[in-house]
Image (cartoon, rainbow, N blue to C red):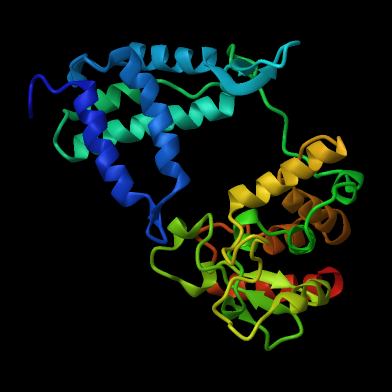
Length: 326
Protein backbone atom coordinates (compact mmCIF):
# COMPACT_ATOMS: atom_id res chain seq x y z
CA UNK A 1 0.00 0.00 0.00
CA UNK A 2 1.90 3.11 -1.20
CA UNK A 3 2.45 5.55 1.66
CA UNK A 4 2.50 8.64 -0.58
CA UNK A 5 -0.51 7.77 -2.71
CA UNK A 6 -2.31 11.07 -3.37
CA UNK A 7 -6.00 11.76 -3.81
CA UNK A 8 -5.28 12.51 -7.49
CA UNK A 9 -3.70 9.05 -7.87
CA UNK A 10 -6.76 7.35 -6.41
CA UNK A 11 -9.15 9.39 -8.54
CA UNK A 12 -7.26 8.62 -11.75
CA UNK A 13 -7.26 4.89 -11.02
CA UNK A 14 -10.91 4.85 -9.98
CA UNK A 15 -12.02 6.77 -13.08
CA UNK A 16 -10.39 4.15 -15.29
CA UNK A 17 -12.39 1.53 -13.41
CA UNK A 18 -15.64 3.54 -13.64
CA UNK A 19 -15.30 4.08 -17.40
CA UNK A 20 -15.13 0.33 -17.91
CA UNK A 21 -17.72 -0.62 -15.29
CA UNK A 22 -20.57 1.85 -15.85
CA UNK A 23 -21.32 0.92 -19.44
CA UNK A 24 -24.55 0.15 -21.31
CA UNK A 25 -24.69 -0.80 -24.97
CA UNK A 26 -20.95 -0.35 -25.26
CA UNK A 27 -21.10 3.29 -24.13
CA UNK A 28 -20.37 4.92 -20.76
CA UNK A 29 -23.54 5.78 -18.85
CA UNK A 30 -24.42 9.11 -17.29
CA UNK A 31 -23.10 7.71 -14.00
CA UNK A 32 -19.55 8.22 -15.28
CA UNK A 33 -20.20 11.94 -15.74
CA UNK A 34 -21.80 12.17 -12.28
CA UNK A 35 -18.79 10.47 -10.69
CA UNK A 36 -16.44 12.80 -12.54
CA UNK A 37 -18.37 15.81 -11.23
CA UNK A 38 -18.32 14.54 -7.64
CA UNK A 39 -14.61 13.81 -7.68
CA UNK A 40 -13.74 17.14 -9.32
CA UNK A 41 -14.54 18.87 -6.01
CA UNK A 42 -12.34 16.42 -4.10
CA UNK A 43 -9.42 16.84 -6.49
CA UNK A 44 -9.65 20.61 -6.57
CA UNK A 45 -9.50 20.87 -2.78
CA UNK A 46 -7.28 17.96 -1.79
CA UNK A 47 -5.77 16.45 -4.95
CA UNK A 48 -2.17 16.71 -3.80
CA UNK A 49 -2.89 15.48 -0.26
CA UNK A 50 -2.00 11.94 0.83
CA UNK A 51 -5.07 9.75 0.34
CA UNK A 52 -4.66 8.11 3.75
CA UNK A 53 -5.22 11.51 5.37
CA UNK A 54 -8.67 12.04 3.89
CA UNK A 55 -11.03 12.53 6.82
CA UNK A 56 -14.63 13.37 7.76
CA UNK A 57 -13.67 17.03 8.12
CA UNK A 58 -12.28 17.09 4.59
CA UNK A 59 -15.39 15.38 3.24
CA UNK A 60 -17.47 18.10 4.88
CA UNK A 61 -15.32 20.73 3.16
CA UNK A 62 -16.02 19.01 -0.15
CA UNK A 63 -19.72 19.07 0.67
CA UNK A 64 -19.59 22.79 1.53
CA UNK A 65 -17.93 23.47 -1.84
CA UNK A 66 -20.78 21.67 -3.59
CA UNK A 67 -23.35 23.73 -1.67
CA UNK A 68 -21.60 26.97 -2.73
CA UNK A 69 -20.92 25.91 -6.33
CA UNK A 70 -22.35 28.23 -8.99
CA UNK A 71 -23.98 26.65 -12.04
CA UNK A 72 -23.12 28.79 -15.06
CA UNK A 73 -23.89 28.88 -18.76
CA UNK A 74 -22.28 30.80 -21.61
CA UNK A 75 -24.67 33.07 -23.46
CA UNK A 76 -24.26 35.26 -26.50
CA UNK A 77 -24.89 38.99 -26.12
CA UNK A 78 -25.00 41.72 -28.76
CA UNK A 79 -24.32 45.36 -27.99
CA UNK A 80 -25.88 48.43 -29.66
CA UNK A 81 -23.26 48.39 -32.44
CA UNK A 82 -23.96 44.79 -33.32
CA UNK A 83 -20.80 43.42 -31.73
CA UNK A 84 -21.24 39.89 -30.45
CA UNK A 85 -19.57 38.57 -27.32
CA UNK A 86 -20.00 35.70 -24.90
CA UNK A 87 -20.59 36.17 -21.21
CA UNK A 88 -20.88 33.78 -18.29
CA UNK A 89 -24.38 33.73 -16.85
CA UNK A 90 -25.05 32.29 -13.39
CA UNK A 91 -28.07 30.00 -13.74
CA UNK A 92 -28.27 28.81 -10.14
CA UNK A 93 -26.22 29.25 -7.01
CA UNK A 94 -25.38 26.03 -5.25
CA UNK A 95 -26.16 22.42 -6.01
CA UNK A 96 -29.44 21.13 -4.58
CA UNK A 97 -29.41 19.20 -1.31
CA UNK A 98 -30.45 15.88 -2.85
CA UNK A 99 -27.83 16.27 -5.57
CA UNK A 100 -25.15 17.00 -2.97
CA UNK A 101 -26.07 13.88 -1.00
CA UNK A 102 -25.83 11.74 -4.12
CA UNK A 103 -22.47 13.21 -5.09
CA UNK A 104 -21.08 12.66 -1.59
CA UNK A 105 -22.27 9.06 -1.87
CA UNK A 106 -20.19 8.70 -5.02
CA UNK A 107 -17.13 10.05 -3.19
CA UNK A 108 -17.64 7.45 -0.46
CA UNK A 109 -18.02 4.78 -3.14
CA UNK A 110 -14.59 5.65 -4.55
CA UNK A 111 -12.95 5.24 -1.16
CA UNK A 112 -14.78 1.94 -0.59
CA UNK A 113 -13.44 0.72 -3.93
CA UNK A 114 -9.91 1.87 -3.01
CA UNK A 115 -10.13 -0.15 0.22
CA UNK A 116 -11.35 -3.19 -1.72
CA UNK A 117 -8.36 -2.83 -4.08
CA UNK A 118 -6.02 -2.56 -1.05
CA UNK A 119 -4.96 0.92 -2.04
CA UNK A 120 -6.12 2.39 1.29
CA UNK A 121 -6.68 1.08 4.82
CA UNK A 122 -10.27 0.36 5.78
CA UNK A 123 -10.13 3.02 8.50
CA UNK A 124 -10.23 5.79 5.88
CA UNK A 125 -13.56 4.62 4.50
CA UNK A 126 -14.99 3.78 7.92
CA UNK A 127 -14.25 7.30 9.13
CA UNK A 128 -16.01 9.14 6.30
CA UNK A 129 -19.09 6.94 6.74
CA UNK A 130 -19.69 8.93 9.92
CA UNK A 131 -20.61 11.98 7.82
CA UNK A 132 -24.40 11.88 7.55
CA UNK A 133 -26.45 13.08 4.62
CA UNK A 134 -27.92 16.57 4.63
CA UNK A 135 -31.45 16.79 6.05
CA UNK A 136 -34.19 19.03 4.70
CA UNK A 137 -34.10 22.43 6.38
CA UNK A 138 -30.93 21.61 8.34
CA UNK A 139 -28.32 23.03 5.95
CA UNK A 140 -27.60 25.91 3.59
CA UNK A 141 -28.10 23.65 0.56
CA UNK A 142 -30.69 24.71 -2.00
CA UNK A 143 -33.96 22.79 -1.87
CA UNK A 144 -35.90 21.69 -4.93
CA UNK A 145 -39.60 21.02 -5.25
CA UNK A 146 -41.06 17.66 -6.15
CA UNK A 147 -41.32 16.83 -9.82
CA UNK A 148 -44.86 17.68 -10.90
CA UNK A 149 -46.96 16.72 -13.93
CA UNK A 150 -46.85 19.03 -16.95
CA UNK A 151 -50.03 21.11 -17.35
CA UNK A 152 -52.00 19.87 -20.35
CA UNK A 153 -52.01 23.32 -21.95
CA UNK A 154 -48.19 23.34 -21.94
CA UNK A 155 -48.14 19.97 -23.72
CA UNK A 156 -50.74 20.88 -26.33
CA UNK A 157 -49.41 24.42 -26.74
CA UNK A 158 -46.08 23.54 -28.35
CA UNK A 159 -45.43 22.92 -32.05
CA UNK A 160 -43.16 19.89 -32.50
CA UNK A 161 -42.45 17.52 -35.40
CA UNK A 162 -44.93 14.71 -35.95
CA UNK A 163 -42.48 12.13 -34.59
CA UNK A 164 -41.84 14.08 -31.38
CA UNK A 165 -45.59 14.56 -30.87
CA UNK A 166 -46.06 10.79 -31.17
CA UNK A 167 -43.28 10.20 -28.64
CA UNK A 168 -44.92 12.64 -26.23
CA UNK A 169 -48.32 10.99 -26.63
CA UNK A 170 -46.95 7.45 -26.17
CA UNK A 171 -44.99 8.43 -23.11
CA UNK A 172 -47.94 10.24 -21.58
CA UNK A 173 -50.27 7.28 -22.19
CA UNK A 174 -47.87 4.51 -21.13
CA UNK A 175 -46.26 6.32 -18.20
CA UNK A 176 -42.80 5.23 -19.31
CA UNK A 177 -39.48 7.02 -19.14
CA UNK A 178 -37.92 9.03 -22.01
CA UNK A 179 -35.27 6.33 -22.34
CA UNK A 180 -37.98 3.74 -23.02
CA UNK A 181 -39.50 5.80 -25.82
CA UNK A 182 -36.33 6.71 -27.71
CA UNK A 183 -35.05 3.11 -27.88
CA UNK A 184 -38.40 1.59 -28.90
CA UNK A 185 -38.16 -1.05 -31.67
CA UNK A 186 -40.86 -3.30 -33.09
CA UNK A 187 -38.65 -6.30 -32.33
CA UNK A 188 -38.95 -5.53 -28.61
CA UNK A 189 -42.76 -5.49 -28.60
CA UNK A 190 -44.91 -8.56 -28.02
CA UNK A 191 -48.05 -7.82 -30.07
CA UNK A 192 -49.82 -11.13 -29.41
CA UNK A 193 -52.24 -9.80 -26.78
CA UNK A 194 -54.87 -7.08 -26.60
CA UNK A 195 -52.32 -5.01 -24.70
CA UNK A 196 -48.88 -4.96 -26.31
CA UNK A 197 -45.90 -5.64 -24.03
CA UNK A 198 -42.72 -3.73 -24.72
CA UNK A 199 -39.52 -5.00 -23.08
CA UNK A 200 -36.79 -2.34 -23.31
CA UNK A 201 -33.33 -3.72 -23.96
CA UNK A 202 -31.89 -1.29 -21.43
CA UNK A 203 -33.66 0.41 -18.55
CA UNK A 204 -32.96 2.46 -15.45
CA UNK A 205 -33.16 -0.28 -12.82
CA UNK A 206 -31.63 -3.19 -14.76
CA UNK A 207 -28.64 -3.29 -12.39
CA UNK A 208 -31.07 -4.74 -9.82
CA UNK A 209 -31.59 -7.72 -12.09
CA UNK A 210 -28.11 -9.06 -12.77
CA UNK A 211 -29.51 -12.62 -12.57
CA UNK A 212 -32.04 -11.80 -15.34
CA UNK A 213 -34.99 -12.96 -13.24
CA UNK A 214 -38.20 -12.89 -15.24
CA UNK A 215 -40.25 -11.41 -12.41
CA UNK A 216 -37.95 -8.37 -12.31
CA UNK A 217 -38.06 -7.81 -16.05
CA UNK A 218 -39.09 -4.31 -17.13
CA UNK A 219 -42.29 -4.27 -19.18
CA UNK A 220 -44.04 -1.22 -20.64
CA UNK A 221 -47.72 -1.91 -21.39
CA UNK A 222 -49.11 -0.34 -24.57
CA UNK A 223 -52.90 -0.16 -24.76
CA UNK A 224 -55.11 0.46 -27.82
CA UNK A 225 -54.46 4.23 -27.87
CA UNK A 226 -50.70 3.74 -27.87
CA UNK A 227 -51.01 1.10 -30.55
CA UNK A 228 -52.90 3.41 -32.89
CA UNK A 229 -50.18 6.04 -32.47
CA UNK A 230 -47.37 3.56 -33.10
CA UNK A 231 -48.76 1.70 -36.13
CA UNK A 232 -48.00 4.44 -38.72
CA UNK A 233 -44.35 4.40 -37.58
CA UNK A 234 -43.81 0.64 -37.86
CA UNK A 235 -41.85 -0.59 -40.88
CA UNK A 236 -40.90 -3.88 -42.52
CA UNK A 237 -37.68 -3.87 -40.52
CA UNK A 238 -38.56 -4.96 -36.95
CA UNK A 239 -35.03 -4.18 -35.76
CA UNK A 240 -35.30 -0.52 -36.79
CA UNK A 241 -36.02 2.18 -34.24
CA UNK A 242 -39.61 3.35 -34.33
CA UNK A 243 -38.85 7.03 -33.82
CA UNK A 244 -36.14 8.49 -36.08
CA UNK A 245 -35.13 12.09 -36.64
CA UNK A 246 -36.26 14.00 -39.71
CA UNK A 247 -32.77 14.92 -40.83
CA UNK A 248 -31.26 11.43 -40.69
CA UNK A 249 -32.11 7.80 -40.18
CA UNK A 250 -30.68 7.87 -36.66
CA UNK A 251 -33.07 7.53 -33.77
CA UNK A 252 -33.80 10.16 -31.18
CA UNK A 253 -31.72 10.13 -28.02
CA UNK A 254 -32.98 11.30 -24.64
CA UNK A 255 -30.93 14.47 -25.14
CA UNK A 256 -32.26 15.25 -28.65
CA UNK A 257 -35.83 14.44 -27.56
CA UNK A 258 -35.50 16.77 -24.58
CA UNK A 259 -33.90 19.48 -26.75
CA UNK A 260 -36.73 19.32 -29.31
CA UNK A 261 -39.25 19.93 -26.54
CA UNK A 262 -37.15 22.69 -25.00
CA UNK A 263 -36.90 24.56 -28.30
CA UNK A 264 -40.63 24.20 -28.90
CA UNK A 265 -41.37 25.59 -25.44
CA UNK A 266 -39.16 28.61 -26.12
CA UNK A 267 -40.90 29.26 -29.45
CA UNK A 268 -44.33 28.96 -27.85
CA UNK A 269 -43.23 31.03 -24.85
CA UNK A 270 -44.50 28.48 -22.36
CA UNK A 271 -42.56 27.29 -19.29
CA UNK A 272 -39.90 24.80 -20.32
CA UNK A 273 -40.68 21.23 -19.29
CA UNK A 274 -38.66 18.03 -19.60
CA UNK A 275 -40.10 14.77 -20.99
CA UNK A 276 -39.47 12.85 -17.77
CA UNK A 277 -42.35 14.84 -16.26
CA UNK A 278 -44.82 13.21 -18.68
CA UNK A 279 -44.39 10.02 -16.70
CA UNK A 280 -45.70 11.86 -13.65
CA UNK A 281 -48.77 12.94 -15.61
CA UNK A 282 -49.81 9.37 -16.30
CA UNK A 283 -48.89 7.88 -12.93
CA UNK A 284 -50.69 10.69 -11.11
CA UNK A 285 -53.83 10.06 -13.20
CA UNK A 286 -53.64 6.30 -12.61
CA UNK A 287 -53.29 6.80 -8.88
CA UNK A 288 -56.38 9.02 -8.76
CA UNK A 289 -58.47 6.71 -10.94
CA UNK A 290 -57.30 3.19 -10.10
CA UNK A 291 -55.33 3.56 -6.85
CA UNK A 292 -51.72 3.48 -5.71
CA UNK A 293 -51.12 -0.14 -6.67
CA UNK A 294 -52.14 0.43 -10.30
CA UNK A 295 -49.86 3.46 -10.50
CA UNK A 296 -46.98 1.45 -9.06
CA UNK A 297 -47.22 -1.56 -11.36
CA UNK A 298 -47.85 0.42 -14.55
CA UNK A 299 -44.87 2.64 -13.72
CA UNK A 300 -42.62 -0.36 -13.22
CA UNK A 301 -41.93 0.44 -9.56
CA UNK A 302 -41.09 -2.82 -7.89
CA UNK A 303 -39.23 -3.98 -4.82
CA UNK A 304 -36.29 -6.15 -5.80
CA UNK A 305 -37.47 -8.90 -3.42
CA UNK A 306 -40.93 -9.25 -5.01
CA UNK A 307 -41.76 -12.88 -5.71
CA UNK A 308 -42.71 -14.26 -9.10
CA UNK A 309 -46.27 -14.95 -7.91
CA UNK A 310 -46.87 -11.34 -6.98
CA UNK A 311 -45.10 -10.18 -10.12
CA UNK A 312 -47.61 -12.04 -12.31
CA UNK A 313 -50.51 -10.56 -10.33
CA UNK A 314 -48.97 -7.12 -10.91
CA UNK A 315 -48.78 -7.75 -14.65
CA UNK A 316 -52.42 -8.80 -14.82
CA UNK A 317 -53.41 -5.53 -13.14
CA UNK A 318 -51.20 -3.49 -15.48
CA UNK A 319 -52.71 -5.18 -18.55
CA UNK A 320 -56.23 -4.52 -17.25
CA UNK A 321 -55.55 -0.84 -16.59
CA UNK A 322 -53.77 -0.15 -19.89
CA UNK A 323 -56.47 -1.93 -21.85
CA UNK A 324 -58.83 0.75 -20.55
CA UNK A 325 -56.73 3.90 -20.66
CA UNK A 326 -53.49 3.22 -22.57
